[in-house]
Length: 513
Image (cartoon, rainbow, N blue to C red; front, side):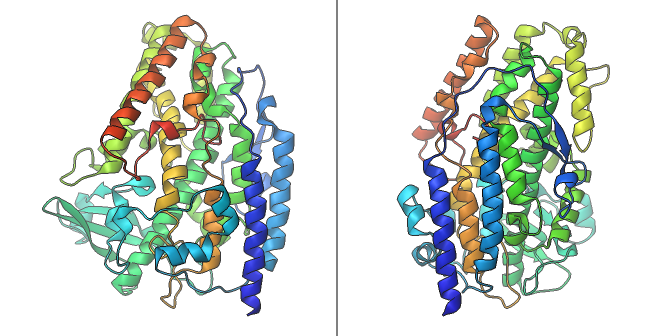
């Protein structure tokens, strides 16, 4: 009984605090770039209790970041988090397996008054024991980036046959987890029959029952996407490092600074807030929401940083490397991403061509060379460059990838996730050793973190990105880009709504809105 009371009080305090922040969130207009320097420090100097080697954290901010106010909010949330962890019950019941009962248990009434509850996507509706969750998530929405064609090594090891597909999260099994939880991870092997992708098996050395093995695999998939791909890789590596290098080495009048500037809108303070809440210490959500201890999170993060390759985030490369540019089954995530990627890539190519008539002009730009060198110094591994020096195509693809991550990928991981990642009996963050479904406390905390990730503020279509242009021709290219995105939006609506897709009307101006 006392545990129920503590959970009720905990939920009430958290929900009211978070909804207040939602209601008062400012809409800050895009500002012109300034001649300033971004100061930064090593993550581990600020947060020594959860090591992320090589990750940089901004220590100075833009005037438009409203940094003083938001830093006070960060400190308040951190203090409140420490107090509430002590208030929260040590155990809560498993989440219900009926969608409405699930929402009744974990979606607080204060949230309902502010924002609509998640809706179970059609691919995940029905009897939970009959749904192939892995196959459904592998090709759509926020989890769609990990699928790859089985390699010759997979086949030689007897783990897959030629023509099968895999998602390999085996290294999640190698690290310490919280007491009472199964180790997440494994290697999912998926087969294709009559154009339908289905999960054949989940391989893991402990031989656990397949029902639990599949749930534990999805828990690892959830952790991988949320912690390592999104919060670590996108927020606190790519976008932070790109903002530092661009601000410090390209003048406010530099054309490349201008085309990227909207992606830096409130980015520095937003990423400071992100890392403080997600990847700072043993009370961070990367540790408390998911299976691994702080030491396990740090080790997995270090592995991801050591293997980091910027080009793996470029959509064309992503699918080519995984052997999934074409598949004998429907792959809505890929089709959605590539349709939008073509628009973004064409936009940046047209923009770069305005200011650099050929590759020699790119190589003659000393500021651009210094920018590229600084990116190599900041990122976990240097960017692969063309032989002979920088080219227009290289600059285009770097900038287009940053814009893609700030719009398309951001929408998938901060908006589409609302429906695809919240129903914890299907997409858990942890799996108890008892075989029960995940606990209600973690399910509530996950919804709380997602509640603030996407909000209809600072939207791309209303932000006047064209105000960043240096001149009339640049402004027209930017307006043409927005017009093309509007056309794509209309075409997508004409095909019928799909909750797993990123829609241009939902794009924020930056990843930290």
